Image (cartoon, rainbow, N blue to C red; front, top):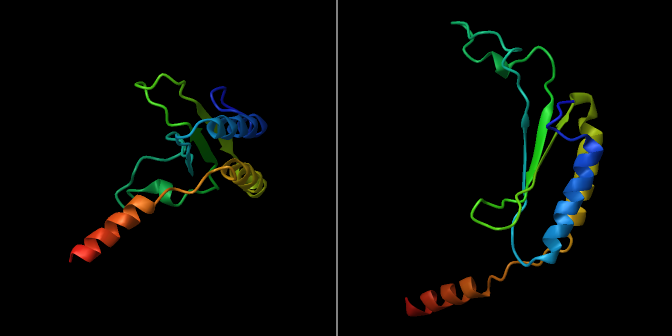
Length: 128
């Protein structure tokens, strides 16, 4: 595993901490992204008949999962960036555990206050 990427166990531990840290504050975001990990050296040069060789790879590709707390340079809080690589044969078990960690982290979220938007809509409707 690449030294800049965490193992799956470390990733889940740190992701849980990130969600728990989020519970203490009243606002903020956690960004979760995933994409297929392609390697430039594994893809041959584009041929005239196949300009996108990575669309049909010869073998299953790993997936990179990233998480960030969305803090910018302007904010005083520390930006946290996590990433891990999941091999194709480990995906099912990974996503099961990933869903459990995300559900546990989202359990404490409060629903958005939409009363202002509804009041504006009623006021606009009454004015028409």
